[in-house]
Image (cartoon, rainbow, N blue to C red):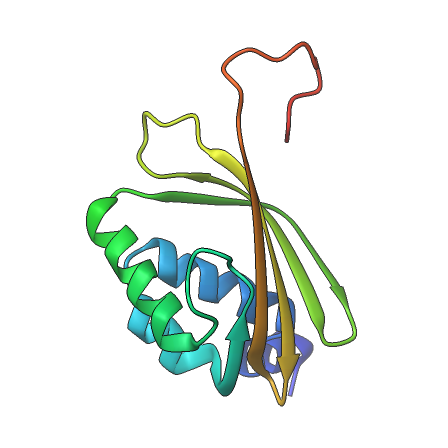
Length: 132
């Protein structure tokens, strides 16, 4: 089996984290959960209960309210069972959006823990480098 075939049939943890986020952003929240989330999943978003069901329902509600959400992945890092994804997320095409970091912990190739941190993009910034 070639390396290309192997990577396609057995996605890396980085690829799984990005795929999860892309599915959620495209409105396929339940598919994302069924494919990637462990039965032992927990998260640390302070606005929702810490179980998978609560976060999934919130993601579905956000998807319904923002059907044209845009997720642009800027950087993906992995160390052992941890993957961090740095993205530009816009709720709609006209939105300035925000910088969001999702930190995933995997166990047995499934997501068992999730942290997310976000910062809105300012309309005016003195930093010539931008957030991305």
